[in-house]
Length: 606
Ligand code: F6R
Image (cartoon, rainbow, N blue to C red; front, side):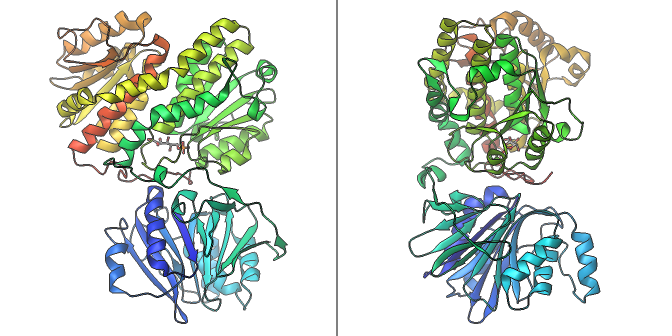
């Protein structure tokens, strides 16, 4: 969590730093701050709250001519959101910005206190700043090397020393950090989207490497100060793809980008009409050899795994275990050599997911990362990687990244079924062709949003509601429910429709909204009997189904119609309806859609 940035060049850096921080606010927005070289001092301005509510209001009161500085946007872990707990943190001699968690900060604090240091904040970060100061005797690299020997935990650090004017030092372990190379300036950032406006060229900083940025450019050393060469990368994302492009919110923009995102994920992996994951070495022979398939992720990513489980088991008749990463990593899972563990993550930085991946590797399993952010920790740690090509997802609430994870699950299920001889080539080609048509159908769902707005206008005042469905619709309902509660703060639960009568149905009373996904013909009548059960107890029911489905006002209060498609693909369309219902509900409630309270986009703490 947290976003860090740094700039050194010829221009005044304040606005550049603040603009870059705005692009990283999805990583946390409890506070923001900058520290810059001004005359012979380090000047710091920081404030609690989102950038526009705090830092941006304070800055005009201070005039800076500085051309080098570091900045931070915080998601609080140690210490409440407050001015004093905001970064940059330092003592006038050293100032740092930090993303990650220092696990042994208590011991470090005790040690530093015994050496006469006092502490102002409740943060773990302050121990790093003071430790650097303690070891600093004129040589920054030596101080960094010694401090890092003492530190346990995860970090990406941007560091400035007062005596080394207009120089930034950067180092990382387990938290992401890139170093941007412009024509006349250099940057550090937690994520390349922060600097795309200035440059597309960047270096991926690896563990144990130090970047030193000054007006002449960037150089790298190992932890002992030995110079190293690094390969320059070029971002394929452009600056407009990281901006709102005329939409009111990033979430709405990203929902509308789903046709393209799904196309970009699926099309490159179809060769001669069949799924092809040769790019990462996942051949049919390899697939045939796996004993068990595990799918692990958090939140929406895990929900996409649930869709994968239904599809793989139904088509390939192979058992699939889906798990939440934070559970998987602590329950000594029965993973071993010969198994495949599919690790799903948009950011590629989720701490629990990363640890689940490391554990799987330790146990001898083959690991396949399905990740959106190129060069992220999970992508680099796995044996095989599939990039989901959704482009940057800025809204904290995942939409297009989930859609492409689900699209991958379909293609993967077809590949496993074909490799295991459960479907023949003609059927595999037919299914793959069906998936290639999904982007058009998603587009059709987006062309007229009035039905989602209509449902939203009837639920936005609710205190609580339920999502129900069976089979694939159950997996999708979990995602629909998460979207709604995450951004509108209406309590909502997803339930397997047939399970309601075992307890949860007692929640139903007059006027309680129930959103039903009923896209699967084989389960349609069964689901309708559950609809009757809740409706006869006073629920207001909205049914999301294919437009040809036989639903009238005696069954449902609202019918949300999806374009015609093969049953199997309808859940990819119903999720669009659920995303938009959640979006318009949150807008009507006046919620901060892109930055819901208490959340951050990239959860790099467990
Ligand atoms: C919900 C959401 C989260 C993420 C989860 C995993 O809208 O975005 O539930 O899906 O935090 O994040 P990644 O995919 O980055 O590992």
